[in-house]
Image (cartoon, rainbow, N blue to C red):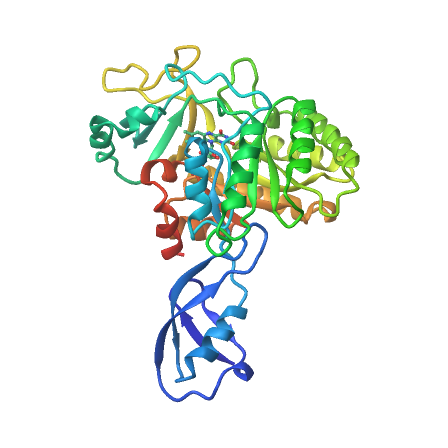
Amino acid sequence: MQRSSLSYSSTLTLSSRSLPAPVSTNIKVIKLYYNRSFLSTPVYKNISLTFPLTSCFAELEAIAEMIPFNLPLLNSANPWATTQEDLQALYDCPYTGAVTTRTCTLNGFQHDDSIHQHCYFAENHAVTQHSNSKAIKDSPKAQDQSKTIVTPISSLNTLGYSPLPLRDYIHIITRIIATGDNFHGGRKPIIFSVTGSASEVSECYRQLSSSRPSPKHGYLMEINLSCPNIRGKPPPAYSKDQLSEYLRTLNEAMKSTENQAEPLEIGIKTPPYTHQAQFTDLISALLSSTPCPISFITATNTLGSCLILSPDETPTINSADGSGIGGMAGAALHPLALGNVRKIRQMLDVHEELRHVKIIGVGGVSDGAGYRRMRSVGADAVAVGTALGSEGIGIFEKIADGM
Ligand SMILES: Cc1cc2nc3c(=O)[nH]c(=O)nc-3n(C[C@H](O)[C@H](O)[C@H](O)COP(=O)(O)O)c2cc1C
């Protein structure tokens, strides 16, 4: 066996049968195609491969095209995945293996800029305050403020869900796929993040199942059961009974679309759990529904009940109840997210019937080292929220380069 060093991914082992005899060092930039895996479809990146041989370039390229690579990196559900423009950019980005939409409901959420807000912070004080309005984001003042962002960055938000209803996301994604260039976007899987009551979420499932252009288009549905900012509605994923109810209703919805060759995959987005009983409840709920309708878990959402104060000790952002208390994410969430992914993976693996459940790890990833940490605790794919907001779409190339 001969080893080649790969500047982009982990070390690659090639069979000596497929390579000519080594003669001298030869460095070439060649195109590698990432094969489909859990979430990634073929996307490519020019990568420097150092081969200890002077082989024919064409032959190396042919071999490289056959090498299975994954790019299990994507955006999480968040405000930077709201509009057609946002989703097109995420779809076209060669460093995302899949795209997640912002969480939506059947009829759209009543977003109000004056109470649904977010800010970034470092340590325990605010560094910027952001409105979601594009006009404000693009204003010279806002651009000036964003220059003050320092890493590692965390976020606090009091947002609810997307003002756009599910049917708008179905149209947006249909348009993106129809006009998509298969080379760049490929048939990237789309994760539709949805929420609502158990029966509303089942209706989302039916609408998504019937709107998929063809089974080869990887549509997945992620049920957000973990938003901490909805007044009077604590995250259902903290309750075993509520979780079980969602799973039971989903099983019924899946039965009604059973004739489909490749049923839509369903995942749940969990909140950060902080003690053993919460993890045990999650696993018990999954075990209680047979067959388990879930094929992936996205861990974690933001940590609720957090507050960032301005220097004058008033809340940095507003919220529906005026307290400014909201969900925290980014760097400050990273250790809790790592712990959640590791614990959930270990607990799923104990049960044969749950071993197939994959995990999308999310929380505080903003570079290649964070990506590697998330993968090392058992994440099959890694998603990015806060760092996408604070650094823009270039975050995916930055993470990919540091993998
Ligand atoms: C401003 C903001 C809005 C968010 N909105 C959603 C949402 O609509 N749906 C959802 O499932 N998660 C939402 N999240 C949570 C993120 O998807 C992610 O799970 C969490 O922020 C942890 O990842 P991060 O540390 O990379 O931000 C939001 C996060 C932020 C910062």
